[in-house]
Length: 132
Image (cartoon, rainbow, N blue to C red; front, side, top):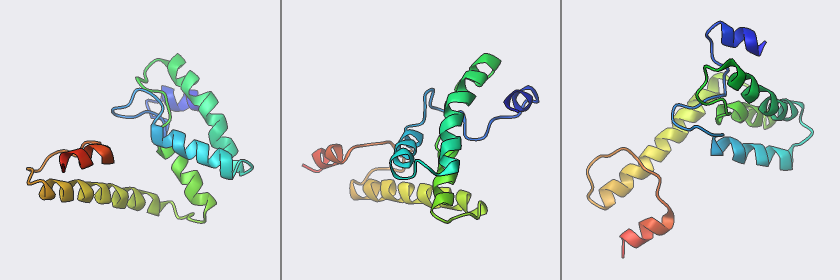
C-alpha cells in the first residue's frame, strides 16, 4: 500500500521531483495525449486514477515536499501501449533524450562562441533574436 511504502521510508516511483514543486509539465502533456488517443487502455486508466489518489496521501503523510507526478509516472504506460514492454530500455531512452538535448545546447554554444554552460530553456524566438 502507499502508506506502507511511505512509512518504510521509501519513495513512490513517478512522484516528486528534485526541482519542481508542481505537476511535471511533461507528465501533463503525456496525460493529455493518453486521454485523447487511448482513454480505454487499462494502464492509462490506472495512471489517471493514481493521479487522484497518490498526491493527497503523500500530503497527508507529510514528508514529501512535492507529491505531484513527474514524467516517469506516465511515460512507461505510453511506451508499453506502443509495444516497448522491455522496461530496461526506459532508462536508455531517457539517457538518449537527455544526450540529444545537451548536444543541441552545445551546438548553440559553439555557434555563438559561448563557454560551456548548464543548458537553459530558451524559445526559438529568443534564439532568433540573438542572431539578429
